[in-house]
Length: 444
Image (cartoon, rainbow, N blue to C red; front, side, top):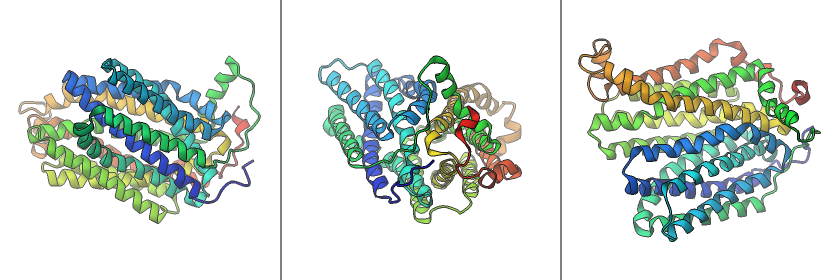
């Protein structure tokens, strides 16, 4: 049963959101400062690329356990634990830096540990939305999460880039610690209702295996939710594959002009902010599946144009339009999951969703480099195998193969979005799956 006396006001959500947004900006500033510090120390791109690997792999391994924990424990407490661990890690890094003992491997270890607790905090936060705000506000709540993310992408690099040369890494770490204190303070002031917990078996190896597999069984028993998850995973696989290509494509086609790359990145952040504000004010479409599928198609079309473009004007415009779609598709998907999954099992189900997306994302990152270096770039050289076919559209030489692969990814995203309408099991997910009436114990 659902908690009857939950808050129907956005005040609690706004209080938590404001604290988490401040903390996110602080963490993003620290991440940007780490990039500068490591580059100054090593001068190696590989050293920077490893940050993403060390952050993502622990999340992939621990996500199923996170769902089990979130459905058994107080979610407000878990969010506070996530912020507290992140703050303690930052304090540790600061002490190592002040003592002259900070090394790159310390940062990798900190990023790996923080990734685990950041995921715990994020999953607990998402599973709490349905207990904090009324269903009619789910879309706005989700879009405000996008607003926080895109705002940090614009604000944090600008602040960190300025403060790093004024205060150094030490000053930015101190600012980050202060933002964690703000996040924890807002959590302590907020009241987060808890769902009515179903009776759970005691911890044992067998029971833990069953509990971890609960989310997979839950989704598999709902063909419509499974179709939604599969399409989302395919979309993010292609998206994250292309995401690794944006910077090298622009740099290759502009003679390593970092200013143009920065302009494109800023345009993407601005598009995301505008999209999040629009969805927050509008509330999203009544049929959420339309926002999800059309958002995918819109993002894919914009990325296709980006791959075809050869001028900064086209790149910045396409990046703006692409990011404009993500708050719509993201909030629409979130609302469907929030409405269709009972609060007391959302931790495990959302963890399963997170695992699927992490696997897809990681695979996209892994295959991007080999596809570019061994297939597309050689094939788009003047005498390459694909140059006679696509050379008139993308040109030939350095960067042409990257552009071809990027545009192909965008076209795949567009097809996935519109192609979703061809499958009734997905198109009518909001009608096929009744709102939260699926008994959790029926998949045990």
